Length: 371
Ligand code: GAL
Image (cartoon, rainbow, N blue to C red; front, top):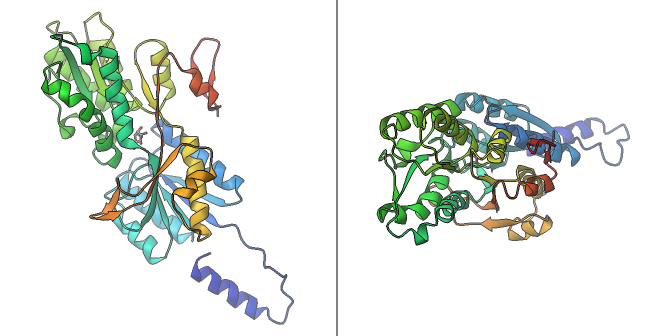
């Protein structure tokens, strides 16, 4: 409980001095402020509900807000949570560079902050919980190498295009770099050819991870570089919302009769249907229910003033690494991170999603999310 609340409680108890106060005045539930970026991208709705459920089941009061992918809205949402005297903030940033006003107020009020899934560039953040974002990209790159058997390509060449994520999202460059560090040797060797020539992050990035934006860019590329019959073999997409747009573009504007390998991330239901239908080839799955469990454990340790180190990873049955090198909230200020492990899902192992208990397989062979 923050100092201010304790002072108020002590004053109240002293004022009641004459009246017998129960041995332990009913400790009010601590309040968890949760700020999620948007409800327009499927995964954050799951994150919000899993986090709320975990903390409420553990006896906390939860205030959950969504900021409609609007960074200034998120600043005021966080300020409102602080005005409501939350005991801790858990934030998935719309833009990790744009929350300083709210973060500085949190520091002033001594409210600890967990950066959830996306790092926030402010030293008010105590810890970061996410998946290993670089590994997400590596898995996408390695999948492409394996599917095209690039190691044994000989003189064969394959044509690829790239769609990355939101430049405001710190994760996006980790996904992109993880994949490109795997694929660049094949691009430099001429085995993989990006026909549009669009390879640098800023060119291939997608504001707000928007499906329509990804669709329109894919249609532009297909119209400009593939209308002459050039074959397209693979489209690297950093997540499912952009992969959905790219797949729509290929369906509508690619004349080739080959199946284009399309990567993704998140296990969004529409993309899982595309995987069943052979339109998308893989998604990198991140069990965000597990991410909420790790976040609860960390928040409890923070609120209880426990020592926090890699031993926290032993308190739950979830593959998780304690990382004190990869992420900085400001130059040289390392943010200790708890990084969960992503996995590759294709049409061949959809049962692994059912085994999580978070998806159900219908008789039609399509997956739905368990509400
Ligand atoms: C990232 C997140 C991914 C991705 C994207 C869109 O920060 O880690 O899961 O889907 O946002 O929400």
